[in-house]
Image (cartoon, rainbow, N blue to C red):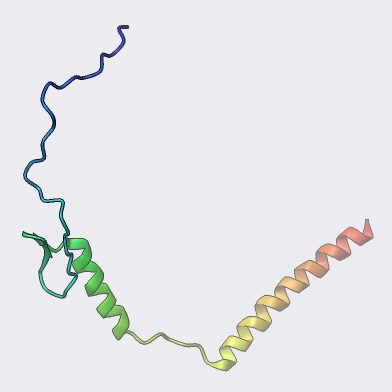
Length: 94
């Protein structure tokens, strides 16, 4: 297999007319972003993110009552320690 030869250009590479100067990106609730002299449509991802943010802010989280929270903690922790105790008892009996 022959080795690849490096590419050599006789003329310097020039930019395609894109300004590399300061570009201000403004994220506003408008439908366009202003990037220097170029107007770009807002991406679907940003639109979805804004819509989901608005919808989740409107929701109120369902909270458990204090009694339900205490019952859950007692049952889960009690079950855990019951299993740990049973495992220790089985090890000790051997």
